[in-house]
Length: 413
Image 1 (cartoon, one colour):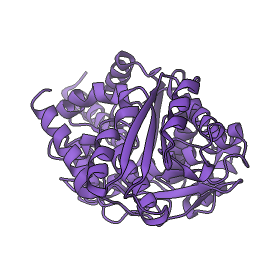
Image 2 (cartoon, rainbow, N blue to C red):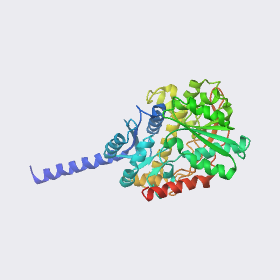
Image 3 (cartoon, rainbow, N blue to C red):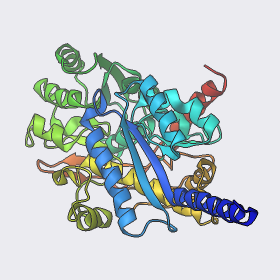
Image 4 (spheres, rainbow, N blue to C red):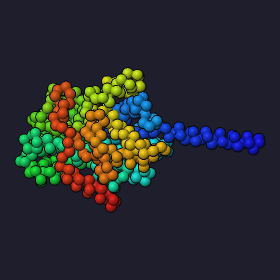
């Protein structure tokens, strides 16, 4: 082979390699190693379907700055070790954003994410103290933490439920870190607002709560806050009503769905309220475009009947925020979109509401929660209807919990 031919072939090989690298950079990979088989099965399928359908919509509409998005989906079974293995595979495959939708898995991955400088989003799960962007620079709750959810529900009682002062409030919760999480915030609120708080735990997974609700009945609360997930939430509603608590005196964490209403009985559950992080239903510009450009073309990731459910729309909203972060990051210039650039994009998000699908959030380097906004909605026998505007409440009390948790993480506690 002559030197000139070798030079030409070498040049072609280099050009091909560069072209391959450029092509790889044109696809932005978001990883979703989630629990499809163990604990979070009540939500993962619909949530993940919404995430994937939104990314497909973005691709069908031309992508962002010439880049397309790819969802890397796998099953962790809610097991931290499987989550770590899935994370390593996806990271090595080019993923720069991760959503595990599992508190045990996401907590286990925090140190690795911080070391690798990849982005992990933890909407309505994970560490609430990750709202502290200085301590957790690559972790983004980006929606109201459970602490913020508790304060939104308490504010409804104060403003629309006859006031907090002098009330007896029962927190009925699954006996787990998640179930116990709102206790500190509610105790602080009780001291400040003059109400009485009593907590009642039941064993996981919550299929049997009879003895717990017998104790609640003896307590005779003015309101009951139910703090569980999956089938246990429907059990809580049924037991509360069976023990004489009116449906309109029951308020739930975000995990109370249309499926739960059908399980309890749509009319029986009429009046029950819940925290809401996103608007359910199909009357939203993004959801309507998904129906038109994704589902109608046979590109949907799951059952079309699930489009617009609470969990589905929650998934859509998470990816809407993530894509907005990517758009803002890419606006800074050409080149590979790294975890560091994506982090900077998240911290530039301001008053973003996904075309009305969610409350407007502003994420900064200090606040990775985005303000802690949400609203209260009520089951009217057929659907969830909002009974408050989007808002956040008692921010100083929530911030104390965030600060204490972040300090504990920094000190290795």
